[in-house]
Image (cartoon, rainbow over the protein chains, first blue to last red):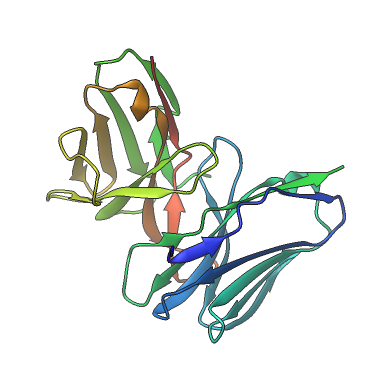
Length: 111
Length: 119
């Protein structure tokens, strides 16, 4: 069993739809949770960063962490074609420096 | 602008030659940098942790003699793929921890990646 599980998709949605992405994990020591967006042939860029459980909102993006269920989510509202990318979840325990990544979910937003 | 810079972004080489990829932190110092490898439609695989002034730490299964890492200064780490073969063709990405300007927390920042094609 992988430490971080993420459905690779692909996921295709019409413009304006809500995109829902999620990851599950097995290591209860994870405390920091991140979502990265990676466009084709580019390096990942940080989208959202959350510490421990809770919700965080930034514009059209909402990240949720449920540590009791070991489940994290990313929601993209009013999706745009420019949101088409691969989204990777990542997490790390306290006082560690090595991120554990999910496989990444490829999202296509159709105009 | 980019705070972690990689060069070259794309390189094609003949089998048996060596290729060097540079990773620079532009506006911060990085005592530690990370080198990842990514195959098409797959996630990032950590290859090694580059430590300034000391030997790199390699992940299990990564050949130290094939992937030479040098971290000679606080802003530069290099990855040299020695005697490259077609199976080494991949996307290589470096990263470093820096303090996020908005969050104030440490965030792992990635370079744009270097695509290596070995003929």
